[in-house]
Image (cartoon, rainbow, N blue to C red; front, side):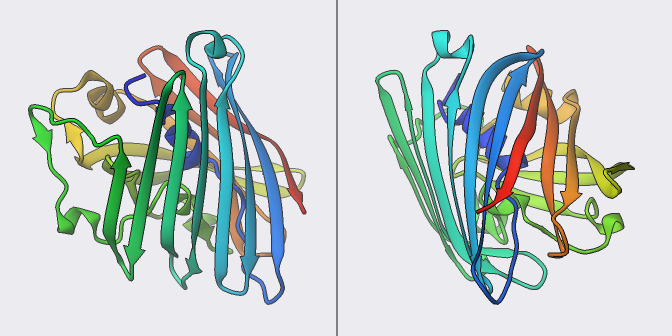
Length: 255
């Protein structure tokens, strides 16, 4: 993979720990599996804690199965912030990863409704045909963990949004559209089709980005988390050049 965090960012962008805002502290733990064409390639777990309108989510992801033979990748991440009326308001995001002998770190600092600090170690290389990040592009952008928080008690509104996704390098819009609503154990499960639209921080003409933009089929399914007023992602399918990646929750438990 071009950067070892790519598998991790795919997972966090679509399936992080569930969210809840309550007067008392509430905590959850979620475990996920990642497969490619049915073959295990990764696993992850996330812990989330919410106290009033403050939240923190921490997680870890590792390559697994046959993927471990070719690419031993491990990553940890954490985000802290506040839960706003319409959207999360992250304060800080961190990602640390190792891939073989290579190590890297990404830090994103937020101030109000904007990104005010980005640190990548090692620094990102200079590339031709690069679409640079601008202050306007980073306005109201969310990190991979915060971008999964969906605050609504109406199933019809789960897919009515566009997420301004930013992982410290790539800024993209994730445009959600309703696909179907089914029932599981008497509860609605809402599936959204997702369109990937690169905005900045990417190389024009790169096959990987062009495929995600023009050919990839992406869907995410959300389920209601009790009576909390939040929906949490429980499954995602992401079309890639080598096949469909499936990310699925194997368990979500209150801690």
